[in-house]
Image 1 (tube, rainbow, N blue to C red):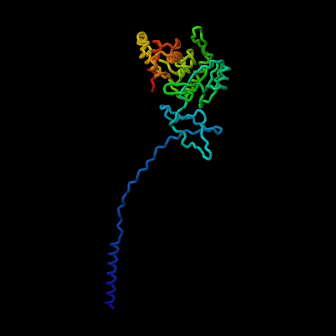
Image 2 (image 1 turned 90 degrees about the vertical axis):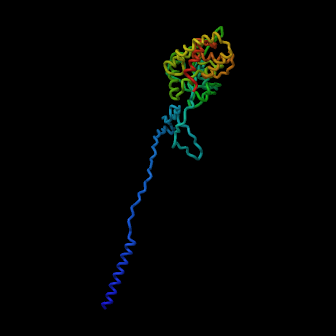
Image 3 (image 1 turned 60 degrees about the horizontal axis):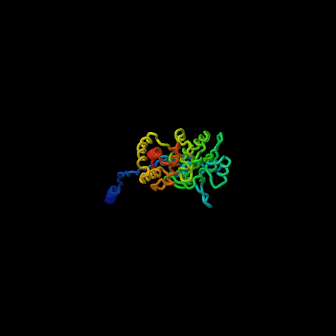
Length: 341
């Protein structure tokens, strides 16, 4: 019996030791955790919210510029937004407007009607010629609008300035009620002056237009500038210098620069007037300024009419179409001040 108990005790001790060894072998050893570096989340800069499109009686408008004005980009809609309506689809303005856009209206062209007011209205509204605005000859505060600024008016006809042609596509036209001119016994044109009230109306209207569309001074022109071989309006009595001095509208030369060129011009006209090379140089300078003139090296009819148009605008004291030292000095001064970009 004692022997039996001894054997049983020894067996229990062996089992206990074996169990402890197994526990020791399979015991869990806690590992040091490996920290993984998290990828930084970069939050993109929030785009500046665009101004909202406004709606009035179901018509949409966008009246804020979000584009770069230094690039002549402008997103303002001065009229309602015109959109397509494709059948079965919806045009949305989720991303409207794109910043890369500018105005169709690049030029402002001034005219006279060569008719009294009643006939001017009839012709400009009922026939195949028109303008965006008509300035009457009354002492009132009214200016007549005849064509939407967003549409082409038929006022410029065959025309060009610098690199642009067919300026109906890119211009706003202002007609001024004025009887134009009559010819004296020597066939010299005698022009009718504009009233002070008309000049003030034209100035206020032009200032508004060139400001809204950022029309540069080089693009505020006479009909005779863009079609010099066939048009004379608004003629030499239109006060371009007054618009420049008092309203900062359009172009004018600097007197000091003109004087710098005048002395040499006197010499050139004394010694070189009929040289083809000299004539060619003057024709090239007229082209450079903006006139659509072919260089021939001759004092031909097209050159004479172009010089006349230039004198209407910048040398109205003498508009005989003959290039002289003063006209030549003025042209050079203008080319210095308003270079082609």
